[in-house]
Length: 244
Length: 219
Image: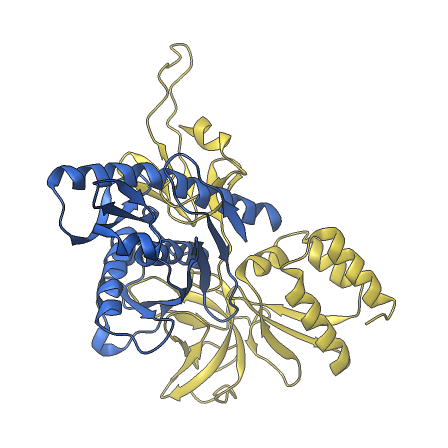
């Protein structure tokens, strides 16, 4: 069963494409039979004795036995532990309602900021941007955000300062930006110094030393989606030489 | 834009383009001969309290005709498309949310319902919504000599005594939805289903080719 999955790694799957979970026909008598455990990520579902893809995309594999489908989509569906950029929509009592681009608004408690107590409330206004993490995200409950990690530190999360520019890119590009040793990020490093905040929900916030540079960076990132690596490097080189 | 030329079961030339609109979460246009439909999907998004269903997503399909306001004909087509989508989507994964599918008819030259179904499927796939299987629509016309024409044009539809549209799923080639007009025998119905199932192979192969081509670009 694993071999049939591994054969298709890197191939494009369509919804409905399945793999049977049956064991191999021949079992070695000398080696000990070990049950295989497979971890399925987004886009793969178990249905009875079969493993079925439910999204179109490319099958990916990570050692030892992790499989998922890498797809391009624009609408964000929250997942626990992911960090997102949200907009504070409403202050009601002791929670803020935050829009993160999903199907409903998430709640963010005023106690979930670094150093905040019942006396000392954080200074958050309606319309502010927050960088926060999901502690509750499942399909049946209201999603809940926090701006602190498990040890009570901000760890980079919290309310955004003034300045900067927020824009949207595709979720695929966000995942490419956040991947370790991302090639887009290393290309960006060579341009100008900038502050970059990337939310898993497809929102990106950029701040650079001048408005002009911020706008250039925003335009470059938005166009990265449809460019191949050589095209991107060529464009970045031209920008660096001051052609744009 | 991709175009498929057809040979054995005679379908007109068909083609498709995905994610061509910037605002919706998924979009596609599908062309069959001169018939062309543009589809946009929004969702999973917030839902009105009156339409909320506690254990699954609410699906809404809107068909906009080329000219004028949507009428009874569009309503019945909306229902056909909606029921097909509900059968193939895994709606229980997004409870209390809404999926809105807007289909804009760009030109009608026969087989409009099957073209709407095909563009709906492509748009749903583009939006990355969880589906248990894909579906496609095939229209068959039976003329006065008893000949079966697949994917008829508007003129062929007019000169036929019966017109049937089937939605067929990709895993077991079962009929998900059927819409029929005119008089025909049981035997002819069975024949039309068999022909549609054969024609669906070609459409599903086209889906696979166009998706692989799309992912070959950005990966």
